[in-house]
Length: 283
Ligand code: NAP
Image (cartoon, rainbow, N blue to C red; front, top):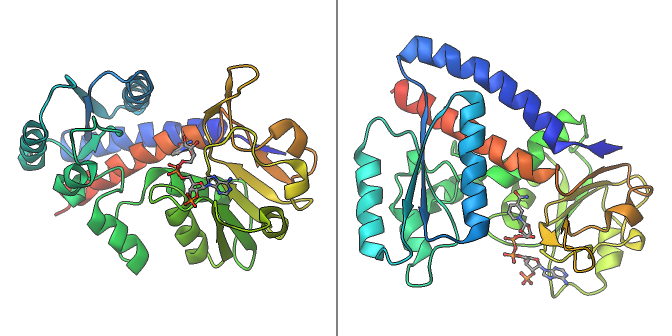
């Protein structure tokens, strides 16, 4: 069975559109997301366009600020300070990657944590690990939401996450742990990876290597979540980290690329924007 992130995201966006109307009636304005894009990297332009489209679909106000690659870090920090101080802005997202002359960690840390709808601010990351209320990073949050919507039982299951990046692998592992799975994190130095992944009831793959996970790495009946976004070297088309055609018949449930985790990520950005708005307005 395929878990369609696209379909789940569509349903969630429909519910959110209703909620945004209710919030507008209650507070006199809709949530406002500001996306800052520095430079014109085609991948980033397409992500930013997707964010604007999702905002439009659910009625969230979206302002996309585009700045030239030549912008200095100081100028970006001063723009963030303005957005932090602006009471009509609920969410701020600085599209990554930033040009090389900027320190991304410094830039992210400059965003007011209550407006950090990407969930990358160090204080939001710390809160996640301390189990305190916070804005959760969108991709990990989307994966848990997708598993729950597909009625996958997480508690007591053995989960393996391949990848330990700050934005995907580590937070996914933490959220699975919080759902009472027993979690193993694998990475590039893991010896005999297949012997680890074959133990997994839930396998989350976030590596960034096209069709890396083969059928002999999966336990029959496992739930396989493919986070990877790659170009298939043979066809040039978008593909995941999992060899979907080879693994589909072995997995109990599996996500597809595109149409799996990606749509959930952007939908969780909308959820976070609404959450940030509600927190601000109820203060
Ligand atoms: P990353 O920072 O490059 O991390 C990759 C991880 O994979 C690292 O922890 C690395 O291990 C591990 N790895 C690499 N080669 C491996 C191998 N041969 N065996 C086992 N582990 C290996 O990547 P990321 O930012 O987490 O992103 C991962 C993928 O998810 C990318 O394709 C990215 O485009 C995609 N992504 C998708 C979404 C979405 O919304 N769908 C969101 C974010 C990212 P080490 O730590 O040992 O180096």
